[in-house]
Amino acid sequence: MIRATALALLLATPALADEYGTLNPDEMTWGSMLERAERGETGMVLCASGYMLTKSGKHAAARALFENCANQGWTGAMTWMSQLDNNGLGGEYNPDAAAEWDRRAAEAGDPVGQFNHGLDLLRGHGIARDEARGRALVDMAAAQGLDVAQRLAAADYDPAEVTPDADDWKYAPAF
Image (cartoon, rainbow, N blue to C red; front, side, top):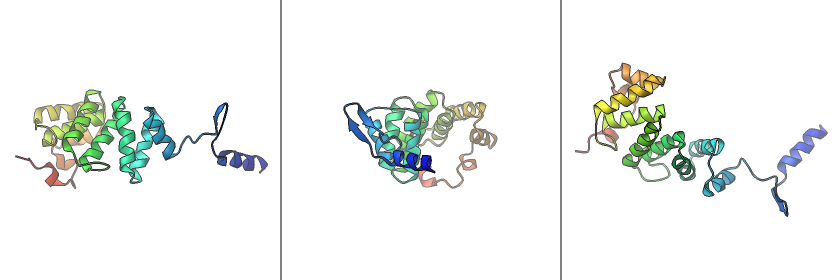
């Protein structure tokens, strides 16, 4: 009981600074994650924390964190940037930017990026329609074991198979 109380007090102690640096710094708070991102830091935990930010509705903060991570090569952050741009979360709706993030993730070998970019190309959403390239990318993702890509290929590349409730207006040809 005494150890548990001592541990609780230690963990609850606010960050203190002295001539040796910061003692007991905030490490896992939203604020500390965003401060680290502003300093240009990236890392698995830092980049993954953007997921919780966006799921809690803090889209602008998630965007700032994901963009930094994506620009450092984290493909999962690239696919999240695409999702934010494609839905106007934390910024303007921007299908061109969404397709560009998908392209970058696909070219880095990420199967989710390949699948998403394949869908972009099949639909002509944010990028010129190119059904052959779209199918090839979906096939690459399917070959890496991505279930949703395997489903799409098995459905003759009909996007309604994997996005039956998609906002069709969003994917209608612009010309």
